[in-house]
Length: 332
Image (cartoon, rainbow, N blue to C red; front, side, top):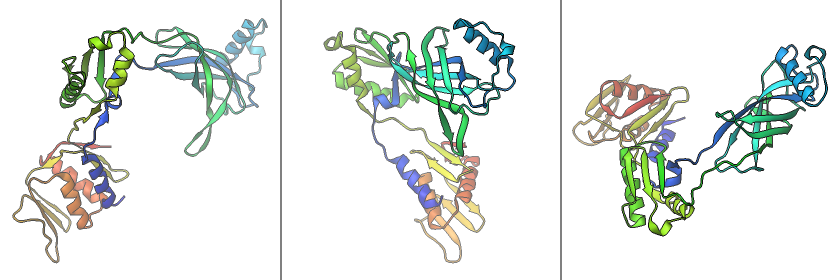
């Protein structure tokens, strides 16, 4: 990545655009739940578990439920694999809806290709069964090709019980910001109250906004939330510079500033707060930037001098160490 690309990253982060409230906050109670289950995959072409006592016991229990009495040691498991089944139960799930399932080997099976997941109960953290999964597996892919010990089962889970809360009749709602910030919370409250023409929203802290349903929306919680979540909010941004040393990527947040400082790196000299405007001396790589400049101005100055991304990262780290960079510097 060259410095021109780095400047583009800076420009994108400094332009302030509003975001929908639904994209920066959650409504308390509207969330998914993780499901997990232990199952057995059958029909494998000799790629199942080779030596797994718990797999044999699983086969024994499964056949016992089907009315077949066998001993685990008498069952060949090369066509069978023990697996962990996972899924995300969406909010407001209803009985009969289907969800996608992920199946991962638990033993030493080398491949799940061509296998079929036998009916598997899936539980949430409260140990209650919310879904049952079953069906033919599709082998997944990774960045390097086929990854045959993990498979997908699209629409392979059937929801067994209704999930959700009654939002239509609620008189109070709570919103939580994805990135808690006092300024953003205050802006959300101001926008909501202006839209509703009254003091119906209030912030209890930097990440929590409480909303009381106005009289016109009594019994219409869904309509109220639909209107609220579409409101345009201008979230505030922390002064942060994020540096990825492995890729040479620098992302500069809006509002990052630097104090008076002189930087010397090899044959490069950058002065912040020097007299006069930006200038370059013949025979030297020198740049003078005003003291009120942002880090973006420094990047632009260094771009004109042909500084490499690696050198830029080193210089930013040095400015931070000198206490002249006003903002957080995060190294990935």
